[in-house]
Image 1 (cartoon, rainbow, N blue to C red):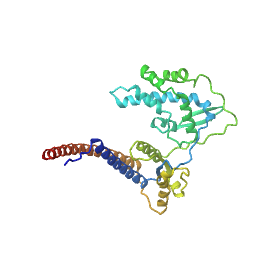
Image 2 (image 1 turned 90 degrees about the vertical axis):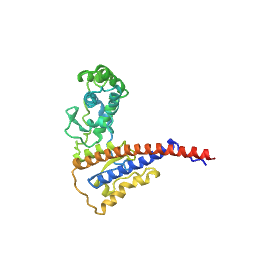
Image 3 (image 1 turned 120 degrees about the vertical axis):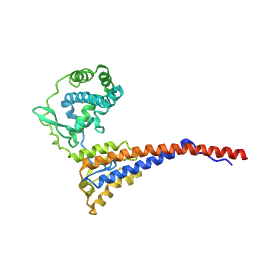
Image 4 (image 1 turned 90 degrees about the horizontal axis):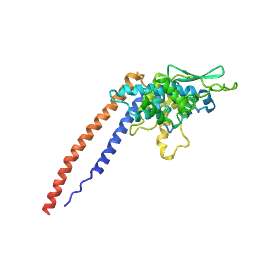
Length: 322
């Protein structure tokens, strides 16, 4: 009689699957808490909400200013990263990563774009920095697009320059905006007199800003769906949904509408302080998940090792008897 011993690959595939389900359960728990504690709710990206579109015709008038702010952001973010990892030295790869993300609004490194308002001043467009992040409309998308045009495929070149030469801010601005790119080689043209003004700058509430950062931090967690922000009013009116969604995603896409129906039943939510509760509990939950995952993994490995040795002994004993 021979006993079949599961391979380590089979065993740990099973373990990984269970851990994934556990993490998914934790994510759902966190989302349930968020739903019960806020007038702003995270909803799957499958339910689309109208977003601003970049006004590409405005880019020539702001390109140089965007480049200067981009250089400033790279300079200060590299310093911040170096301070964060000190006494270790920042690597060229880490600088490349910053330069790749600094023009991508889906990344934290591009949060600076959310604070910029495009303002008409005479025959020019000025980039005016605000104290708080604003709603991302067409102006926000225009700045992002201009930033990406400036950076182009130069992210590794500028990262190498920063890593090798460790320039001051003025030197970096000159290198990026005049030497590496043509963003500031000539004066921007005057804007057309019939230019349609952009939207007014609308600051985000502190709760909304915190929620968006929280959702973004959850994007890398296994089991966490892609999320966007929708207000309670949107859910109540059911002004969301994606008619073109795949049939396989029906359950996920119905979630916003189902949640809206549930809210319409009159279930009251509690008002709580976001900083002291949502962020704190999420951080605690994340630490708990990591701690339990490590503990479970260690115990499973230890148990599997002893079990495997025991099964091998039984197998040898059975062969001897035969």
